[in-house]
Image (cartoon, rainbow, N blue to C red):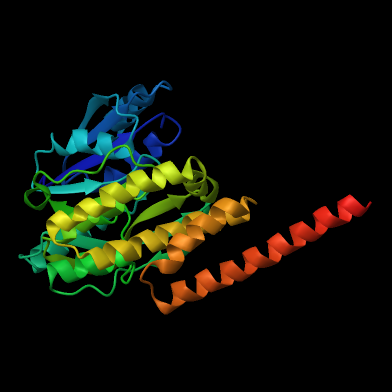
Length: 312
């Protein structure tokens, strides 16, 4: 039964898209369409994908886009999806064979569920790391959405979720954000979803630490304010402000960590101050204190070096 619309946003993904498509080939019996959104690629992404899909007998449909934005590209495909279930995966990630069928079996065993969350394998700079298994979810929609935003329950990855097209409805990814657009999308879905969990890994999530950190290093104040403005719109699906403030603290702490590591101590201190006043768990409170102490030590050492240079 062709039950799934697969959505893949792609910008200059010619080097990886054939491998991603090949990882889906074993699921052809349940895939009704693969919607590849070619987002202003200049490297032959479309031609590469069409060749691979033809060889793999995958029902590929290419949708052109000029969003230059992963969330915007996904939205193009969400508006076109035809099948009862939607599965999103990025153009440099890998699906694990049998994962889609396992997600569908879980949906069949829990017929009221309209969002199925599987585990995923995290791969950092090409090296396999831990398997992230979903846990901590409850029956109450808003409780899940709130806990997810606060980081109290295990996050999901794009590629580890099967969501019904009915659940998605008009919900779309926020556009123009440098980071966290997927978290805001999943939170909106969770606020109205009946969830089912599955411990089986269904995909490999490729992580580049440098690329991830770069998102927080460029124009940090402007990007944070843009993201914060979008985050606060989650109040329209009844996620409490306290949960959103906790999320602000988590993201601010990430930004502080990146700038501390790169030697921009003033920016690190400003974002650490934001994180320090946000609601937080004990583990985040300890991280804030630890970075505050590390900042103080580095600033003192820097001041002593300047004094020494002046003497010499």
